[in-house]
Image (cartoon, rainbow, N blue to C red; front, side):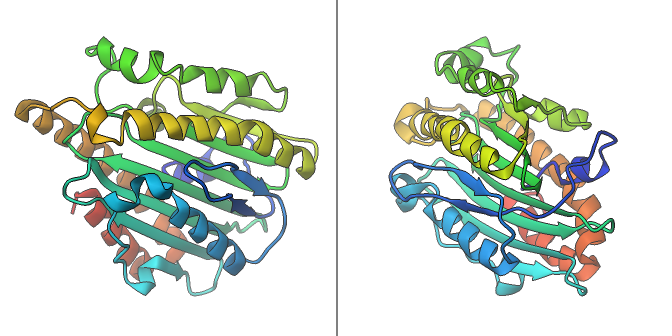
Length: 304
């Protein structure tokens, strides 16, 4: 779930708050061929339909048999506040019992800020269970103008990288994940994004692409997303699918390790909700609506 909502809204740095986000289009295939955000002012209903289709394509035919259908009630799949200034769509698919995937969650949030600007956040995250120690997957797009975008793309680690250097080598060094961040930073329009939250910074890996893209015009932003961000996202996703989300690639985890993983996973998930949703959802959607949505997320996270 969008772990940076709170920090983006409350950041003391120049806010990324102007007109709305756009759609994400993907040509269906085994791996995504494109990950593009069009800076066009479309209605929220159109965006939700397009974004939901994007989520249904994820993670393509590779993992379809490992995921159960979404069972969220309609008033949790789509919800808004009474005055319509904040709208959201939520989709959660749990993994089959035999799968290393715990669940995949997609969320789309559109918020009109009191200043008249709008903030749009699209997030897709895949969480693994304790049958494996492999990293999770996250991609998040935060946009508030046709020319500015924050990208978060990572395989967040689930073990201490200092205590477990083999984990660092297996999932980050041997896979050359940092090369994608380095490649994106060569573009003059892309700079590192530093979250004001220490928790958010600590939650992501050393190879995370936490970047802010500022283009002079919307067309240039589309070019960057199509020609640079899309290939990087596709390659990071492929690493996760090949090295993390398949049972054959993951070594057997002992009972003590499983317990340690479960403690860490639950602590991370609980803190994510406390730092983000518990603070922002009631303010955006009201107590009743936010309570329903947060309860469903906590249930999926296993932290009720």
